[in-house]
Image (cartoon, rainbow, N blue to C red; front, top):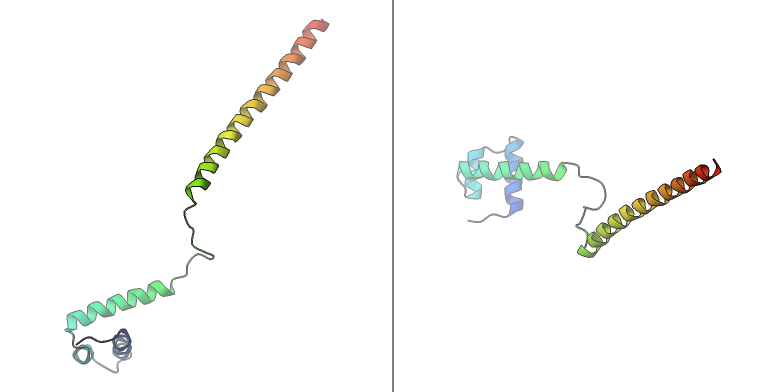
Length: 104
């Protein structure tokens, strides 16, 4: 005898409220006491999970492969730019040093 989730929920609430005993609820549902307790525990875990606050906003999704490729390329270009800026600074420093040496 298969019962609907609503019927199971109603019996769980009635047992928790002290209106029915577990034995009577299990009998009405056509379940053993052990199976009733298993279903009750599962339902209570699901309720707790549903009531647990989640992070605000949309869930994160994996970026498309193209986005990841572009991010990596961007990182490489930034590193190259930093290296070039350092070379320019070194060349400017060397040019100033040569100018000072020529003046002496």
